[in-house]
Figure (cartoon, rainbow, N blue to C red):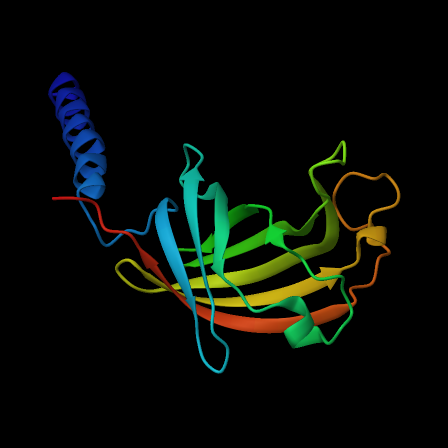
Length: 188
């Protein structure tokens, strides 16, 4: 009898232990921190950025790389506080899922000025931009984002001169934007 119960327990464990995860993989309602996304800024502002998220094996943490496609100029929002940027670096992002449908993130990018063909360097940084925020999954392939921007002058990175604003650095300008992010669908 004990052997029979043990065999039954092993069979039930194998059946449910293997089939439940297999069924979960087919469940499209579970959000996965991955994909290619387009973020459209909601009114009263206008803008757009795009990014690609690659998750770690847990699917709960990820990194993203993206670009500003259409962005409000810093001096338009903040006044004439920065030397005008002629281009932007890519956006670098670290993300973590904080719930089944919520994500927190940190990101950084740089406003750049071309130094011309006679310079030994191609660009100089005229602005350091950081953004922290939250994303909430509102429908399959849709997220609502709240983004807290903090803009710094290049001298905010003094010690240890690592490309990030120093802990004690104070942003020159802060503002908030909201987006509706849409995942690029997979081909069928």
